[in-house]
Amino acid sequence: MQDYYPGKLHFSDNLRQIGYSDQLLKQYRNSGWLTALSKGVMYRAGDTLRAFPAVACYNAQMSKSFYVAAHSALELHGFNHFVPMGKPVLMLGHPKQQAAPLWLRVTEFDRVIKFFSTEIFAKQYLTTMKVEGVDLLASLPEQAFFECLLLAPQQYAFMDLFYIMEQLSTLNPEIVQDLLENTDNLKVKRMFLFMAEKAGHYWYNLLDVSKINLGTSKLQLAKEGVYISKYKITVPKGLYDYE
Image 1: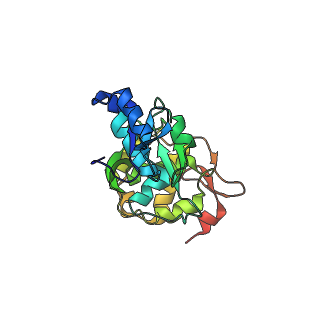
Image 2 (image 1 turned 90 degrees about the vertical axis):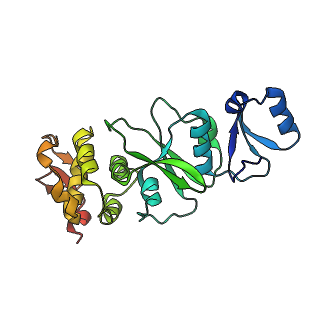
Image 3 (image 1 turned 120 degrees about the horizontal axis):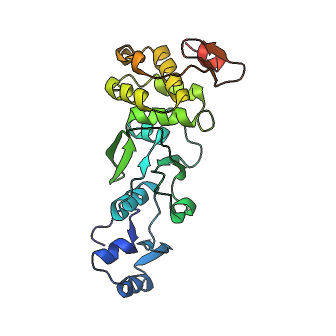
């Protein structure tokens, strides 16, 4: 109780490891100190369930690696174009071998959690950020934008993503280069380069495109769009015409 903070969760497996017996935990629940969220997951009675603390507790107590991804990570880093309507969305990334538990998928938190998993990155670029008083894993901006492109156009519109790309003037060209060389997705790589060049960022000129495998096939990323021969992609006309 002395280590309490808003939204903190307690996991039975972790509590047992540090000396709390099943009998004692049952006593805490019966006395009204703790409320069961799911089997093996509890929170302080009367507390409000919050997504960020829930994820942080799950990672810390259960040795998991869930992280804030895509547009949610970009927002944490100060890049924001999306104006939330109603509950904000938390895009939560996770390794494929760590499936999202049922309690995290069905519980009503202060954010709508959407889950994201991919193996296109040979190396992940993550950082730890202090958010709402807890430590959270989050994609670095470079990887977060790649994740957005991977989820487009189903989750994000290309035009909306370009508005964000215009803000990304401080990306690390070494990280960008490594991601472009070691990301196994042609759509993501080609659209990233097209947007970066169109935005006119200084770091685009520091990239060595000759080291990046962009493939040879043509990709139609928009119906009735404009074909960009340099990157062999068809992009939305509104994006091509935007200045």
